[in-house]
Amino acid sequence: MKNLRIVALGGGSGLSTLLRGLKKYNKSITAIVNVADDGGSSGKLRTEFGVLPPGDIRNCLVALSEEESLMSRLFQYRFPATGTLSGHSFGNLFLTAMSSILGSFDGAIANCGEVLAIRGRVLPVTLSSIVLEAELESGKKVKGESKISEVGEKIKHIGLSPIGPPATPDVIDVLKKADIIILGPGSLYTSIIVNLLVDGVVDAMKLSKAYKIYVCNIMTQPGETKNYKLSDHVVAIEENSYNGILDCVIANEGAVPENLVKRYEKYGARQVENDKICIRVVKGSLFSDEIYARHDPDKLAKVLVKIITSELKC
Image (tube, rainbow, N blue to C red):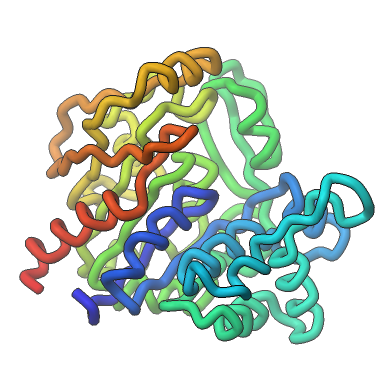
C-alpha cells in the first residue's frame, strides 16, 4: 500500500479532504487539481496578475503537509475582512509571488511543496487559462465556475473555453503509470468533470491499467446535481469520458443528522440516493460530524485502503 502510485483528480474542498486522510497510508499520492476557479481570492488574483487560480492548489498542498506545522497554518491564514488584502489567504499570495519570481506556475507549486514538506505531488491539470462554460436545461448559457454554481439550474452540457486545452505533461505521465486513480469527492461538474475535459486526460486514463474509483458526494448540489441519484453521477462521468471508466464507486450509507437535512432542504439539496448501478459499490458511514454534510477524511481513507488492498492484493 505504501508504494502504490495513487492519483486523485478533483478540486475544491473535496479533494483536500481525501488527501488529508489518505496521506497517512501512502507517500506516493499525486493530486491533479482543476484550475477553472474564478471566485473569491483566486478569482481576484487571476484577474489582477494573470496567474492560474491558486486556492484549490493551496488547499491540496496544505492537506499533504504536516498538518500542525507552522508553515501549513501560515499558508491557510486569511487576512481580515477590511483593507487591501481582504479575503486573500497568505498561501494564495505566496503562490502568486513565487509564480512571478520563477516564471512558471507549476514551478511555484513544486517549490511550495518543498517549503511545506508535502507527502506526494500537486499538479494543475493544465497550465492554460481556462473558463468553464455550461448550457443549462432552460437553454441559458453561463460562463465562469462561480456563476454556474450561483444560478442553481440543472446543467445540460459542460465545456471549456478554449476547447481542449492541453494537459500538463506530468499529468499524462502520472495517469498512465498510476496503480489507483480516484475521482472525487467534490462538485460533480465544476470540480471533477472539468478535469476530464482537458485534452489528454481521458485518453491517458483509458490507457492506464489503474483501478479507478469514484467517491460520490453525500449530498446533492443545487444546480449541478439536483435530484441526482448515484447512477446519475456515473452517467455524467461516462458521458464526459467513456463507458466503463469506473471500476468501483464509494457511496455514503450513513444517515445525515436531521438538523443538517433540514438546513440543506432550504437550498434544494438532499442526501444522494444509492440506487442500483452495474459497477461495484462499496458503502460506508462516511459522514463527518461537523456543521456540513461532508466526508470524514479518516473514514473515507479507511474505506479506500480496504478496497485498494483487496483489489491489488497489497
